Amino acid sequence: MTNTRGFDEPPLDTETLAFLTRPGLRRLWAAARTRLERNGLEPAGTIRLQHLDVEEREALSLLQARPVTGPTATIRLPDLDARLRASAVGRGLVGTLTELGPPLIDRRAARDAAAAERTRLWSTAEAAMASTSLADRPWAHQWLEETRRTGTLTRQPYGTALTTITQAIQTLATLFPGTGPDPTPAAWGRGELATRTTGSAHGLDDGTLLARLVLRGIALAQGAVFPTDAPGRRALWRRASVTPDEVSSTVLTYGLRPRGDTWQETALRERAEYHLETHLTLRELRILQLELPPHTRVHVCENPRVVEAAADAGCTAPLICTSGSATTVVLTLLDALAATGCVLAYHGDFDWPGIALANRMMQRYGAEPWRMGAGDYEYLATRAELQGVPTLPLTGVLVEATWDAELAPAMDVLGIALHEEAALDLLLGDLA
Image 1 (cartoon, rainbow, N blue to C red):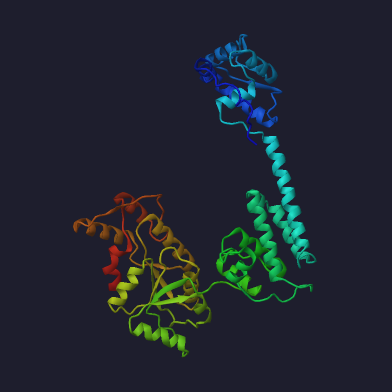
Image 2 (cartoon, rainbow, N blue to C red):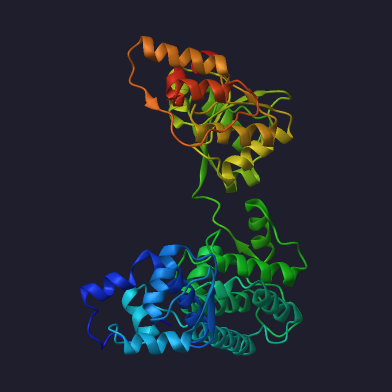
């Protein structure tokens, strides 16, 4: 709550304002502001200023019309309030600090208002749940109590928190209808369910607070552990008969020749023979038996241009593109390939975000660096300089390369960022 008292008074004249804003009074006003905001904006109690310097003693003496000679001063706020009113300032302590700014905040009133909002939020949530099929579900009451305890909702604005909790209750009630202990949930697409309960097809998108709350409810209802990664969250949605979107996100592939005689494996091999790239969805990865011959070396790049150039050049080696930071569908494919014994080799950009992405690939899969050493970087940087190619400055925070201790220092010294296209001819030679 922001104080508005004092705005009806005329502004302070220049001389008075200059006196009140002198450095010697700065600590006094800061301490008085803190005490007032704790006191409900009432000038009560005392403040104690220690280790006063000469300038502060002089300013306090003039303000109080009595000498301050020692290193410590104790100031009663009622006395200071009265002194300000009787002086040329012509207003009390609250009005003075309001004029000096910033606005005062009644923190006691703000705490009371926040507590009242929390009470109203949970009362409304309990009433909403009592009117749904969740009313007799022990897990639902446990979920609501755990949500209350975490404090996640109460850190949101009241309107946002109220909308989120009521939509979460409505979503869970939609998933678990009826009066039985835990009847089989109805089948939903996640976008369809979100539209029904939030009005937006994106209301339950991964990463939103609402989606997290609903998933926690599903986990309690199903006796499952709350997942910490995207594949686990999709699996939990499916346990509640909710189908996540598995077709909009794809991974760009090239040259995959999996074993198997189904039409899917045959189609991939044919596209590889005709040097055609293939975009695979999560849904396809879930039904595809993607098994390459043991120890197949699969190259992984960051930029789609590498795939395009490999196809144009008629390269034969299998290639996966992360298209920047690897998304769930990319990781799902790489997980499947690694699980069948493929050897992954990674190349990315020579900049700090690129090194961070490469670190994650190396650590997750034990991937081999593919032309990503200090020598590779120095060669490419030197070649670019000799060819007169405009260079990009290397910016951001240095990131050590886990696979080559010399790479980050070399990049730091030369200060040049090199995108994957700078090494395109070398990469294509490896893929041929």
